[in-house]
Image (cartoon, rainbow, N blue to C red):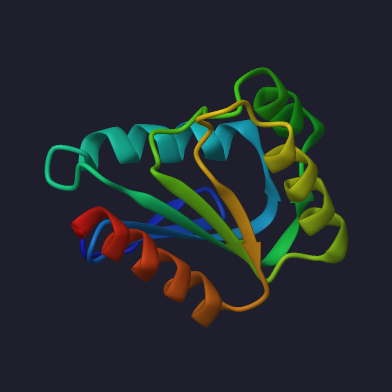
Length: 131
């Protein structure tokens, strides 16, 4: 992908190897999730293992509709793992509950404080897959 795309107020781009980055501006909602899913499916031919890293520093939160979507389908997107960083305490708490509600085999939803921590987690995921 290489270039940055906009999805409404959000910005998204592909970082090598196989990391889809999104800067969430405003609410993280079902519409954004669906757009990310569609983009991931397009990229999977070249990048069969994709990780999502969401920068939540400009986010106002997760909508109730998205929380409901995750409650009904804890693995809605085709990502090997999902990471969020820079989220408020409320968003981290919601994400933690969402992750704990996952069924066995559910892909991880991990919250970290900084971008570097998210990158380290993703690098570890890639290393585990390569081993």
